Length: 249
Image 1 (spheres, rainbow, N blue to C red):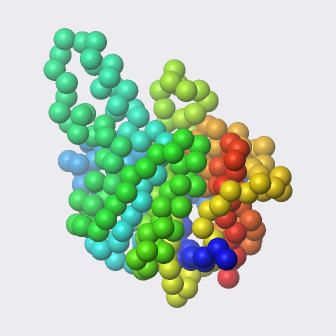
Image 2 (image 1 turned 30 degrees about the horizontal axis):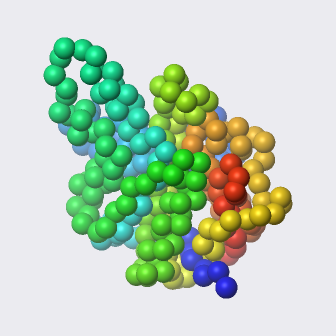
């Protein structure tokens, strides 16, 4: 029997609110007040979106951020800063220590820990098309092992378009506070598993979106939570398809 876990809250963010409004998904704009000005100057669009959704979800779930384990999942991570850093290798100028510091994949997780004085374990991962599914899987493994609550954040900024079009054309981030306990939960869900049937798949509209915004693989789950629809949901767009059974309360 597939173990059951619980959703306490969810949040989505994009600088292009109108675009996602057309999909009838409620998204917020970036909250600039969450990061001090001197620190904000160094952060990427990816980090600012991720911090916004993470904080929103934690507030909605009424959880303490100082001791909350977290998983940060992103296909591209700090891809704009990394691209700029690599381009500068062709110049005679010295590499920027600040850019180097902010180019690693766990940059956002580090900022989250600093801003919330959080010393709880955090994981930063990337798994190509399976990034959201594997982020959810990682949270489930942690909840099954240790119990309690865990924060999942999935995000990707706009990419330099010469790299891997059409990926990275749209910036998007989402987060969920997930739990091993049903208290105060909005829904339950099962650990991601391979679905061999043809009944669980993305709509063409959502597939195109997920190709342009990697983190948008979470949108079927977010829409189901928002609209209170129980369903077996796809978590990625390239076969084999990972899926999870969502039951909304």
